[in-house]
Length: 222
Image (cartoon, rainbow, N blue to C red; front, side):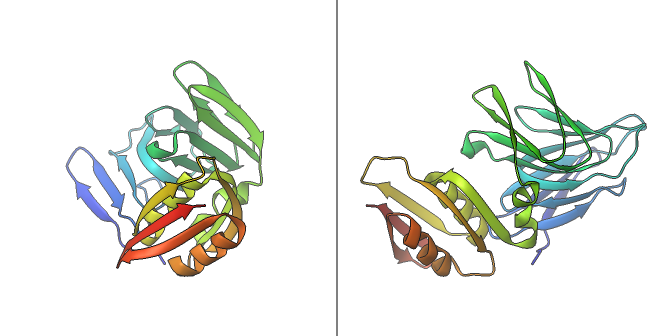
């Protein structure tokens, strides 16, 4: 279910924000469609005759309207993704310590401060600690969140908890008594309650959760 996002508009720029627990779909002036994940922000100004540029914080799935004369650029705080018309996912939450650009259709050119990398469909670029790594992926997994399905492959438990906070608008306190890094691989649907999701995670990872308030959860790694 997509909720209405808040928009803060000025004559110079338009800001679209989605709070925790919500997602939104935005249609840009050129016909490009953007799905914004929870706790994300998209900023754009009137597109010029030579450039279509947006700025992203958080995560978004783009279906860019093709226009070979006017490049479309997605700017994050660590890189810029340049396309003509294509379908791709950008994960750029600052707190996750990395950026991921996954290409479904077309071609993208990713610019960082020190490098430039072209992606083909089925590839993902991972930018971490100023290092670029290109891997082969199942691209539909990266954008499954648009349809309220979540596929995780070996992500840190700390990241999983941040994502749950965003999607379910809850506050999670994570205490890792073991001191070991715990990763999670699995799939679930956003239609499930937070408690159903935590019950499922408990089956595969050594965690124990306790509800401390209406929207507050304590999780202990045993």
